[in-house]
Image (cartoon, rainbow, N blue to C red; front, top):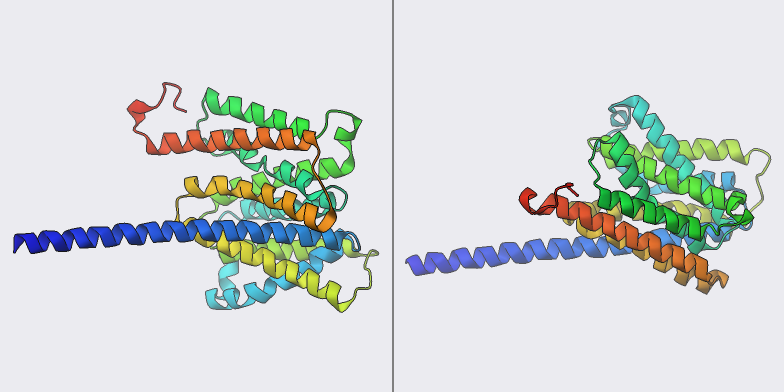
Length: 315
């Protein structure tokens, strides 16, 4: 009898481990798929920006996002959108998220996709530095060194010359910083539903697009309209996939997968725009990715290894 109960317990344990493993694998697949969709969204945005102003793309993209957001808002209840915590911080997050999207499209209109994505890959490095000051998260000398190395990679990617101050490069740099700030604020506002967060940043993007498109609206073909609407659908699907993946697998496992965006940017940039990143971009990107992965490693070490096994500086 005892033997049979032991076998049943072992079978249940194996089933639980298998289920957990399947959920983690599902989370990894969803993250990779979400990153692919974001890369497609970026490539589509670059294609559209060759013919249309940033404001017009933002307007139609935002309307496309509501194709998916509409049912989600209805299920949650429209009034829930107005029951938010820390309204001032919500406003700041929406402003940063809107600036991120607008500045990305402004940069990608003039620069190769891989170049702009290299600036955005520095986001985790900015987050590590900002978290020290705004979230009270202690960062030891090893991670500070990685932050400085990552910044050096950004400078190399910017090409240390007069071109370093070109407007498109500054757009990409400012957009990546806005992106990092919006993520830091999202950690403050994690009790707010994803539907509410995405809806308000979409509304802000729509309003910003309307303002920027005044005097710059261009006639478009049905294919162009469809492309701009699809842009919103693809971006929203990517947001939802990544949000779901973070609920199925540990963030420390999924976060480094974000760097596949750079790989996709290089591949799609070559296929659709015949863009080949130069050596400075490749070197800068490699330094940024190395620094970012080191920061993730140290953070994961701090959170998973017993305190007595961590070096004295804590990180």
